[in-house]
Amino acid sequence: MTLLDGKTAVVTGGASGNGRAIAETFADHGAAVVVADVREEPREGGAPTHERIREGGGEATFVTCDVSDYDDCVEAVAAADEFGGLDVMVNNAGIVGPQVPLVDLDFDEYRSLMAVNLDGVFHGSKAAALELVDRGGGSIVNMSSVAGMAGYGGITPYSAAKGGVRLFSYALASELGPDGVRVNVVHPGVIETEMTREDSPIVGTEEGEQLKATVPLRRFGNPEEVAGVCLFLASDLSSYVTAESIVVDGGNLNSA
Ligand SMILES: NC(=O)c1ccc[n+]([C@@H]2O[C@H](COP(=O)([O-])OP(=O)(O)OC[C@H]3O[C@@H](n4cnc5c(N)ncnc54)[C@H](O)[C@@H]3O)[C@@H](O)[C@H]2O)c1
Figure 1 (tube, protein in one colour):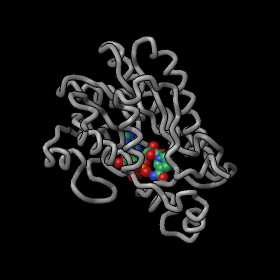
Figure 2: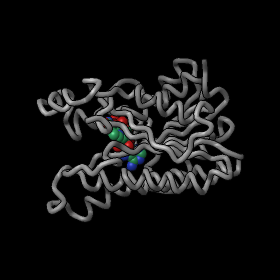
Figure 3: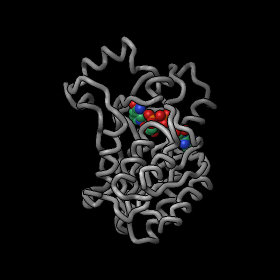
C-alpha cells in the first residue's frame, strides 16, 4: 500500500536522523521529497538522503535551508514546484542546545536555540501555509518532543520551544482548518539519532540504561518509528485529525 502517491513533501532537517527516516519513508510511499537542511551529509554517515531516495527509484532533491531564515523556508517550499507543488510540510529540523541550568545560560544561547526550534517552525509553517491554502489543502506536521509535554530541567529553552511548537500548531490548525490544511504535532521520547548519541548523550550510557528500564516497551525508539507516525499524519489515513499530538516514546510519559 502506498499512502502518498502523487504527493510532494518538504522535510526540514531531512539529511539526518528522524528527518532522514521521514523523507525515506515518504518516498517509499510514493511521495516526491524535498530534503531541506543546513547540511547535505547525514550526521550518522552514509549517502545523502536525496541520493539514496533517487537510487531507490524515488524522486527527491536537496535544498540548503536554515530554518531560522524565513527566505530559506520559502525557497524550500518553492522547490516542491519541480514535482507539482507542496502537499505536506514536515517541520522537523531541531537542535538540543546547551544542557545547563537556566542560571548558567546566556540569553544568546537561549535565542539561538529558539531561532531554530521555534522560529524555524514558524517560518516553515508560514511558508507552507501560504502555498497549501492556495492549493486547497494539505498537511503540516511539526516536530516537538516529550519535552514539549512536560518541563525538562536542564534543557529549559528546548522544553519551552517544544511546548511552544505544540500550542503554535493547535492555534494554526484552528486558523487553517477551514482551508483544508491540517496541522499536527509529533512528540518523540528518546530516539536513537546523533542528537541522543552525541549532542545529549543518553544512548549507550549508564543513565540511558536506567531510563530504558523505566520505559514500558523497555527500549529506545528508532527514527523509522517516528517516521511511521509522520506518515499517518501526512496521509489521508488521518484526514479527520488536526490540532492533535501523538507521543512516540514507548509509553514512558503516560504510564506510571
Ligand atoms: N532524537 C531524539 O531523541 C528526539 C526526541 C524528541 C524530539 N526530537 C526532535 O526530532 C527532530 C530531529 O532530531 P534528530 O534526533 O533527528 O536530530 P539529528 O541531529 O540527527 O538531525 C537533525 C537534522 O536537522 C538539521 N538541522 C539542524 N539545524 C538546522 C537548521 N537551522 N535548519 C535546517 N536544518 C537544521 C541537522 O543538520 C540534521 O540533519 C528535532 O526537532 C528534535 O528536537 C528528537
